[in-house]
Image (cartoon, rainbow, N blue to C red; front, side):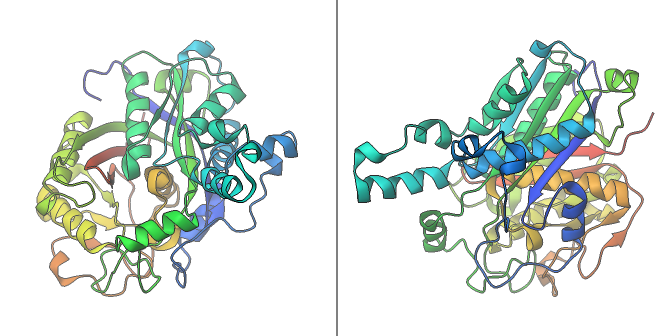
Length: 396
């Protein structure tokens, strides 16, 4: 990363997603059929009990926080004990909304039963920063503990900022990622009434007949460390973060800038930060929400930045749905798994790529074998927030 004194390693990661709990179950889900038949896709038969000391703790944590703690448990157990000064271990987290499920439930309680029946835990449960704070408190991490709330770009922004804290020497390790569980009745109605959701109840990114997104949820959490320290303690290294970009369209609250000019600039910032040229990127993990405007703008942006090199591009949202602020975290996990398995998962449900996207190489049908290399993962959020991060397999 620009101005960096340290390389940034990923030494553990955990996943909770509708297509699988645990990173290998998540991977199996990504290779399976896409979701269809509903405007939401949620984690089925969720049991938070294994991640809490008792039912009282469970009741005091919104579903968003529950997912975050479950994913963090897998990531931290995988990474192993972090032998660092706790004031140099940070927690940088991302979410688009936070505890909306709890807020909506308590509004119903107030209306039906009166103000005195509203839970005193409403505020700490609905706070956007609750998930990151819970991870910090559970594990005693006393370094920077901050939450980034930039809509669908939040987790990607969190990972980029977390990596910089390590690269610039402020932290020795940072636990980072994102979580979301916001598919409430009111939220679904709001997205539907702004015509963002699929009327056919199918997420099919970049397809000629795409008509909106399917609402998802979940969490992915990563342990980032100074690479030299991780090597010294014998940690397994799953990948590196080479660079990140962040900027704003400054165009419209929900629509991307025409031609994807903001996304173009963001990807170029990430490439510059990583010290890479476009032809060195070997995969694009797209934001690919299945909305007409977003997919068109992103495809134009990718074609502009990468030109004739045409790295293979995929979107996992045909399986996961769109988990808003957690999207970048789940997609970063998908990239690391694609390194491990030497396969790029297909863009599920997409059968006929929009003919206007002939200048990009979208992986459809089945997983594509590849030789893992630097991969750029994009996320673009309401408010004009753009985020790109570049991950790569670890090399000595």
